[in-house]
Image (cartoon, rainbow, N blue to C red; front, side):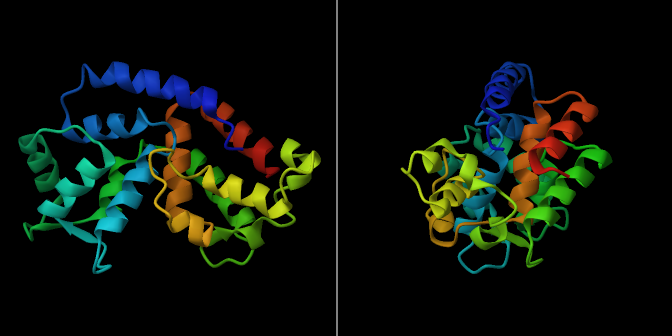
Length: 214
């Protein structure tokens, strides 16, 4: 399913084009993420999560700047300050990065969100809010994968590669490699990226239904 490389290439090219004409700081950051493909916003979320040493799911300005730099986002300090202040609505000096990432996602129509949720619920067989290798057994058929067919990979290797496809190529943080799981937010972040490259609701919904046999 993660074979959306053509959409990724088109989206990256469109994002780069729009970036040169865009002045809104939120939109500029969104476009910089989308130049990295469907996993771009999810990858930024992972970088922020690594920065969150005390697990309070919030970042101060210094952590925010370091996260942007670590992820390779090019942004002037005054632009980053304006962005941070936009999200620091109560003036506390920290921002909730879950709220930040939700705002950063390219908007999806209600119909698109619903079909993404259907796919997640189907894959999350155990209902614990994450998709794991165990969840994929019996839902995602590894036997059609060419590397499984030629004996190069085991079923688990196919599953791991599938889960890893939700990771940004710029963002191999080791966490997924240890746990091999995708959270609800990561799934939504990924598909909001895919959605950004598809104009038609009908086509997006059809693609999801075909991919996941919904």
